[in-house]
Image (tube, rainbow, N blue to C red; front, side, top):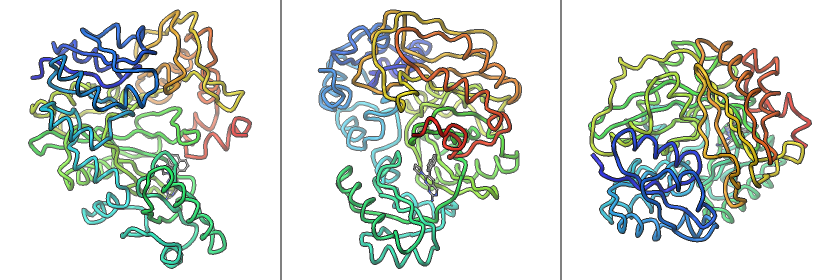
Length: 450
Ligand code: MV4
């Protein structure tokens, strides 16, 4: 087992990883920027080392500084968390060259899945259902239009290097295809220096359902059920839950088996997520694979009883998974609400500043993952997520009741947050009925989408 892990991240996920390490008897090193001198992860870790100025590019994204810190502090592994360097194949490769274990999949797999059109092709060959569309990459409008006519409009034009909605356009017919293809491709060239595109049939008002998988070095792959992450705003998830209200046990087992097949097809290792679109007829289609631990992993932890961060560390150290598929028992219902430093009245503009007072809820089935404390200054340089409130109840109804109660008790003073917005979602009748799809916020909260 590792003696010491360097946590190459900040915020609540860095705190989450440090706590898991401490429970496992592993020493921790925090890296921090000049803006994070008093951050909770800096204070909680056994050791901490400053890696540069506030800007991410010069600190949490600075591979050379992080690797140098790891060697200097004599850590034997790096946990990258999510965001920052977590899906950077070059970083995973450099870790190996420095004799440091990158806690995640290999550089080759990160690369393969990071290239979305290649991932699509790999999954088609593995017999995984993908959204109807192109198999080979598309580079020109002419070829694109010809293929789009074959697929049938509307279509979604996507950048192979894309993600988070970047380099993505809907085309409703031949008339608007050329403009949308060119715009998506230009955005991709500008953002990712890549003109590789692919085209899919546009699935209207789908649910975003993702399957959590875990794989060890012995070829064991398990799935831990699904998360419904349909409630998003501008491709930022707002609320996630498990299980998905629309999925039967039969469909869950089917999707889980497909996700395991997908992971095995690429020789996957460590934690991963297979993202699917679920259409109105309950057809599901592979969309992308995320090769990191995700923000919303706690909802899966609550229903499965597993600690996914510990599991990541175990398998990275060469241990087998702690459970087999047969031993996975999913119980009850979990919901996570992301609380951000942002102002819903001002188009969700980030609102950093000093937090003057915090009170967090507690009690049976309530979990709070956060790095904030009273008198903490939220820096303007990073993501605005402050806190994840996660609840676990015997069923969806109880989980909703718990979340309403917990949101009502949570107090964050001194800065603007989306707490009231979350409360409105929890009290929306359509949410109660499980009518979650990717247009949910647009459909029920149009006043927040102007
Ligand atoms: C789609 C789609 C419908 N049809 N692809 C959005 C982010 C990127 N990862 C893929 N996305 C979508 N791809 C096809 N063929 C709808 C979306 C989409 C979406 C997906 C998940 C959650 C929220 C979303 C909001 C708008 C669009």
